[in-house]
Length: 122
Image 1: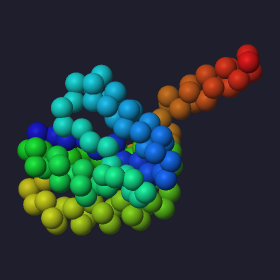
Image 2: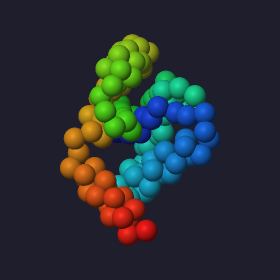
Image 3: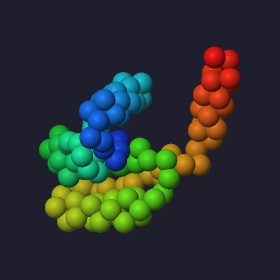
């Protein structure tokens, strides 16, 4: 079984964290995925350690971490690999993969164009 984690930075603004949870829930629903968690690097819970533990407890043998970050900055270059390495040692028999961040995805340009068009028509 494969579990998915939408991994965001986290914010001291609760509404920002709730927005990520809504995106995660929608992804799970529209994708038909059963084992899905949201996790945050800092300032919000659950963190990645807790999210991976939840999925492993539910039977996930593979976990795919999807960074909800625009670019491959310091958190994804330094912090995330360190956390994944730690979790791999804790959860033996569970393989953890990490996808690319959102940067470079062709849909982002379309989103920017939509935002610009809406602003220009207002």
